[in-house]
Image (cartoon, rainbow, N blue to C red; front, side, top):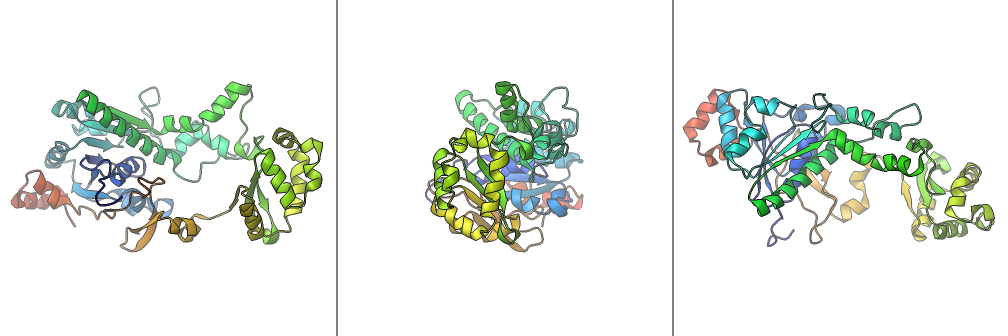
Amino acid sequence: MSESTPLPYAGIRVVEFTHMVMGPTCGMLLADLGAEVIKVEPIEGDNTRRLLGSGAGFFPTFNRNKKSIALDLKKPEGVEAALRLIATADIVSENFKPGTMKKLGLDYDSLQKLNPRLIYVSHKGFLPGPYDHRTALDEVVQMMGGLAYMTGRAGDPLRAGTSVNDIMGGMFGAIGAMAALRQRELTGKGCEVQSALFENNIFLVAQHMMQFAATGKAADPMPSRISAWGVYDVFTVKDGEQIFLAAVSDKQWSIFCKAFGLEEMLSDPRLKTNNDRVMAREWMMPILRSHLAEHSAAELSAVFEQNELPFAPITKPQDLFDDPHLNATGGLAPIRMNDGSQSKVPLMPFTLGGERPGIRLQPPLLGEHTDALLKEVGYSDAQIAELKSSAVTRSE
């Protein structure tokens, strides 16, 4: 965005009590769009800062464009500081276990009495109902919500290869917050927004539920499904390389056959339409695999791209740092990692006025903005020093 064009949520203040992925995703999206997002962390810091393995990249990925204040909410003085911050906020966002915020006096019912205009976003495992007492994780709801069944091979349920429900659940929390801001413009009142992992997962598998409703036949797991298209597969080709290739219309089938000298298959009446080819896959695909196996992935890519046919190399996540399209279009931005080193991180996958919302603030150090924020809500230097000496707060 140009300096003369404000981001759409500039002037909106968000105070978030979040950790891991779901809640931080909501705050990141609002922050990328201009909101001032204040991350309230425990004195020891968000545990996400210290995760290993698959969680090692969580904090820098989902906490850019935010400020950090460290408070001990187990102490009355910490809660008081949080309440002073909340008094200046448009939105509060949280993703703790049910009942946690109520014990602190920071639940929606308590806060809306102090500020009827407040928008309160809760990110949970389940919306209110018979399951809402359960502890949920992304993998839990994938298993119970049909997604793992659809992703894995028959008899081998498999979670999706990223935190799909956490990330999308946070996105829907942000969408709900945006809707609530618009509603507040109309009514003058805030409201509570609830987003949940399980319901998000059900939204994702709705197409398979409705396939059953439409056909009366249960959807097979994706690896063993009856494809909707004749050619829509991963091919193993020269030197053991793999590539995804597709021809999803009769026109594309014609182009594909002509490009690879398959005129005999093009004229075969058993393969005339896409639906014919779907029904013929059992004998058609071995022929195509054998014919294409002599080509390299690079050769196939060139032919498919020249003929505007769908294709994709099989890419590992770490290879995307060097992707020419991402780098040429500004899809990656410099980011500070937990250990202070520099890397690049994907930005939001949309543009505003031809530009992607960028990074204004690096992921904050623990308590990086504590002093400035406490002063803003009325604490003196002496009071801040007293809070630090009592381990109610800290700053870097």
